[in-house]
Amino acid sequence: MKRIVFAFALSNENIFINNIFGDADKFAIYQFSDGELVFINEFQNPVPNPGNIDIKEKRERIVSFLKSKDVTVLVSKKFSKNLRLVTDDFIPVLIEKENPEQVVEILNKNMKWIKDELKNRQSGHMLFRINTGVLKLAIK
Image (cartoon, rainbow, N blue to C red):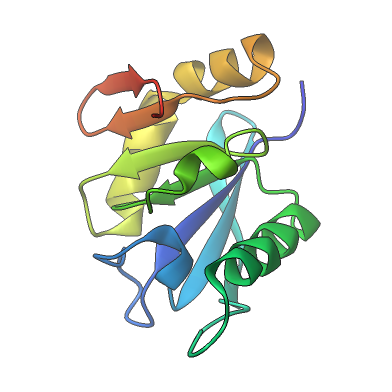
């Protein structure tokens, strides 16, 4: 199975942003290794202040950046309406908690669902809503 690498959409204060994934100040990268998520590194958003940048260009730059880090799972409190445009490359996970440590704990407990999605779906990944349990949704 392919490596499972997560990108968390965080603010500079190290909490999940209360905005769409692409508007994060930075992305914390975690890898699932030896049965648990392990922090690897964090990177500033490559498009921090989009200003007049076209939304398509912004998405392409962020997607390219995340692919260069081998990311397979996006974790955020919100996603834009254009989420369906990236589900061939990433599994989107919606969370409710702000604290990354709490989210790591919840993801570790529910990793079987992410593994199943990667194993059984090559593209068009479903949206996962994870709080204390898991809800898997089609993206419209």
